[in-house]
Length: 239
Image (cartoon, rainbow, N blue to C red; front, side):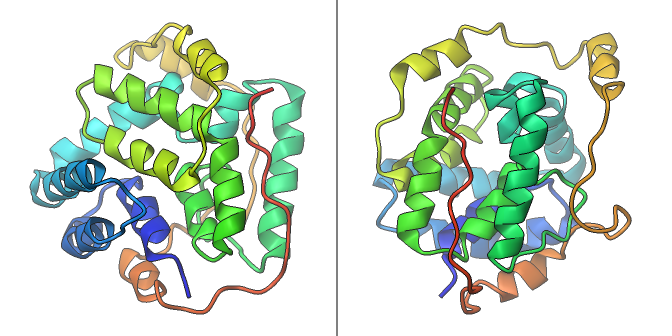
């Protein structure tokens, strides 16, 4: 069976759309009933999904972009926090996309393979022991992002707190402190943003014109059988 909670968190952290807003009541209901997540976190997730579902679409899209697209310290591309712009990042990307393919998973998106919603969609098809190992590797990233989002007064912090709880392991406090020691960037600094966009792009996955899967299709797959194929979890631990 597909892990509905990981699928729901993947959708919650995806770019808001009309279709995604329509699906938010169902997404919120899935998150509200998972006993692996603490009651106060489930309540915060309900507030988040309610806000995403009922808010003005332009406003929630603008908020998403300002948080996750214009702030490298809040990037949803996980290897950004592990490898930065080092050569190791390219190798890690190749390894991760091979991990997906060995598991019978081909992301239908233009996002990089380390984009958190893509990773969570993949993990939703895997045995939970493997899921916990992978999430535990990234727990320091989740905790640091949650702290930064609290500072920005964003309800998205609940999604990262939930991921830490699903990991079932204490994050590396030193790694968290190291991430938080980095100065928070200014999402309104368009000159800095232009510099980021001018960096060399690396393309992975399917045809870049293919687009992202439809939200309703993703929801319909929540109860689909797991994709076959044993394989190692992607390395997201702090170096």
